[in-house]
Length: 315
Picture 1 (cartoon, rainbow, N blue to C red):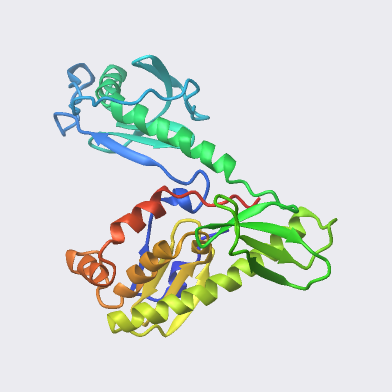
Picture 2 (picture 1 turned 60 degrees about the vertical axis):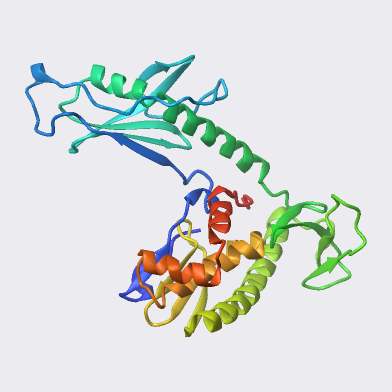
């Protein structure tokens, strides 16, 4: 999946950017920074220690921490040896970024390695915590890989759907078993495919069905929230972007990522309300959030779910 061309959405466009984690495996990261005590560039012999907050307590991460492929340095933080990539940049402070590949450090060219290591120790709690989170996320992504076969499963509107291959039928039909036992998925998606259908064939049939359902659900929810907010949606289109959940243009055009259909209705409502609120406030000011809150008083929970969620891996 690739991100849509922003220019196609009009000049007054605002996008809903969330944690990329839920959008694309390996796309999320966290960053922090530490500012040197002096902003001007001193002579090499007059390097200043880098000021940083007092380290916070951190959970003990797993033994095998992520290692950046271009790591050339490492530091011991507590009981762990942490490899990191060092990037020299034209900046005034030391910055830290923890992504799926591990820790990256950006530092001014005039800051020495001793000062960088001092800043790393000061930020040890934050760094280890974020590395731990990345490992947990990688584990969830591994578990989220879809097996395209009879009996495989996908999430749909927050529920598990079991895939059933049935050559007697055509297309894709969702069945519900209201008397399913607790803990047993009640939904099955019957695909008009033979038992010997290949993974790519099954995946394409399921993805096509999901996209049709996404449009249906999004149209319904946009109608509900457009009425509540007193706005008009002039055009709704599906997106396959890897870095955004939705976008809104001042002309009333709305784009929503079809993969939102994996989440429960409360999350979909949050993204819909967020984008439609932009038709009244084309910004992220307190006034904008007041608009969102006026139709979704508890939107924070849905936003948190969206940020923490992991999408099923289709490849």
